[in-house]
Image 1 (spheres, rainbow over the protein chains, first blue to last red):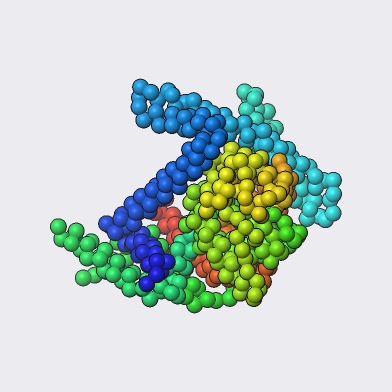
Image 2 (cartoon, helix red, strand yellow):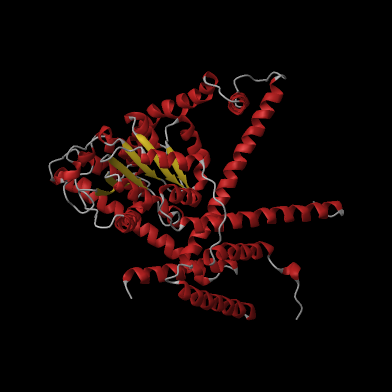
Length: 228
Length: 281
């Protein structure tokens, strides 16, 4: 039995343990959950640890002394564990946050604001079919009405704005509905993906046996619990 | 012993029925028509438009949860790019994406060799692996500014300065095409730092949940195309002429969604019936 196949079997067993939640929460489902969290945390730690060693520490020894600053600032983040010295962690955090925000903001204006404005306006310059005209008008109406909904600069809004704001609110509700629909489809899709792995022809027969064993174990555990 | 239907937890019962509905098309595949959407078509056209021997960046965020949904598209993309003699640089800005690069490469090589008998894919000729790079947006910006400075060694410890494939590659200008395989969390910084700054072509492999996010960038042309979840993978399998497992998943998804819709309608009718009979709301 090779390592990959053993891995598939262990994975399938843990998946079945998680699916046993459908009966009720039980020790097997909790073992699977805790194993997932433990493995994920361990993996993240090891991968990042070696990244720091390979890039930062080895970088210093290979003639890049500037990495010392990054290593020191990174190490200072751990001072957050101490109440007395936690203020030191702010230097590293400030640098990380500042750099990230600066890099993002300088591009967000073009990527997320300017280009979107161009797309809203552009179709009017090249209208070719009634459907395109309708889509463009609708997009413009939604953009304006949603933006007007978030105009808070005046204390009292003019009454005439009421229907526009309402249209903007409905447009947002449709948008949230689409987002919610795609999110729930994604969850279903994930479950299908897991099920497909369980029903993979190479391990399908094992999956059936393991499902029966896990189900029997959970029912037995539940019956014993009820007797107590 | 009497059986009381009212005592059953209906939520759990619904989940079990859903599980059965999901499993049936996975065990007994059925044929449901599959429309091709504009995102998959754009993705396919963008890949086909890549000039031969282009250097391509391939950033992978796909991890365990999304792997069954997106693996087909991720592998077939690499295959198609290799068929165009492209040179792929694999890297990951999420640690969880690293082991899945192994799987993409291994399986893509198998598919490639089955489609192109006698031809092989070689490390440092057709692809290189740079492994995990920390820093997300900051890291990516620096990666595109000075790749060899940020990543002194590849995944196997070989200095990147000694890799033949990267001889003339060090900045975002040297990578005209980027494949951005995302996980469940949107990472638009790829568009910000690569497409907007260097003007290269970008395509995305994402879960269907990110449709509202991706469609915004697709309409502006910042993303040339996208594979959206297992449905997108199935469409790309068809467009690229490489049948695979995604179609089976899509059939299961279609049936399960239909079942959810029926459950919603039945639930609402029952609720309405209760209200009309004068029951509590």
